[in-house]
Length: 457
Image (cartoon, rainbow, N blue to C red; front, side, top):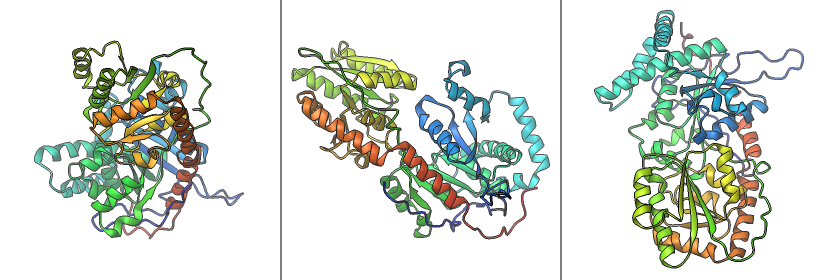
């Protein structure tokens, strides 16, 4: 496990109304008078959608940090992606305890917003000033930011009611816009976890520099992610960036023994991801077509839904691949894992990624993986050691890699074994959660300057 640089964080020079920490902002309760131990840190997680099939790592992170002594309450911009009765027990429990900003009760939300604005005019004025100071917005975009401010006022009100003194946000897009305004309006310190690729490809549209300047610290999921933030910001902000890798639990995702199958068989290939251009599914299908023309047969299951589904289905029909490709749409996590456990090879032909959890899960299960040499993926997969990487958007190279695995069972076993060892040593969720919990403890218990301004009224 690599060590983490946990140098101190301070306010950046370009912060937009960056909050000044109140003396009790980081822990709502005093130290235990009997043991002398510090009180549990009390913080809020603001997420775009929680719980959600596509973001199961949110659930694992929140539960893991609570198990390690942090007090975390969750707020979500959007409601969960499934009906409550369709949620597994752990997710249903989380949904019941989560504060939803878009809960469908417009009149009730409007009433809360009005009451908040009347009771806390200072927070409203600071929020409006923060919106006015966001650079390079069109009139229409500034209107959206006023909606973000309305949500920020409700988030801050909820945090006050729950005694939560720090706000943490995953991703740097609109959810972080709400986080930034919450921090500015309510003078609450906040922090970010940046994943990529969206926020790194839309830096100006997402006002990422301004968000980083106002944040106390920023967790990055990869060295590549950290490097992209370094090039966007002034050296005075670089101490804020700390690499905390995601991971999966290798004990829960262990390989299982396969029954021996006599005679040749068609190998099962699985790919998981939303059906959007950035995932490179068309390149994967083109590679499959090339393999078919070479006489190499693979059976592909594409797990995920999205706007590209009709076009991909047309490609399959046009090239006579219907017998070799199955589309499942989005599946539950357990259903997805069942497909992975039956697979022989995992493939992800992405053009833009952070570090996909789907790759980690496949590697933990001992599957040989073929992916692309982009963003943080080469940190996860050492090509030729833990899997095979190809240049992005190169169907011929992708087909070559798949063919080499299809033809060599020993290579599949070797790469699959090494892939699992890679997860155990570097992307082990329990170990990385320990590191994350320790990082929160260090960052949030760090002595801070006395507040120069009064609390919001």
